[in-house]
Length: 70
Image (tube, rainbow, N blue to C red; front, side, top):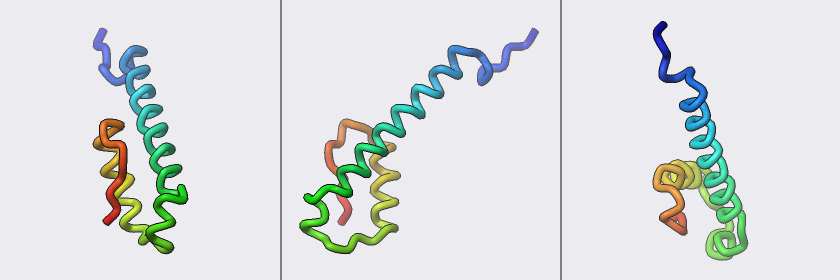
């Protein structure tokens, strides 16, 4: 019987854990972007720049404590 690597319970757990971690980081990043610190310097932020920053931040992970938008 052939065992598919993507359907085993352990690998499924790892995938869901990874996705959960990414969602937590994305949530933290969105909270940071919505905080007064960012809005104090820029009243209007380009949505495309935010999207790029979010994508870069989720790839880098928690080792980077800030998001550079410009």
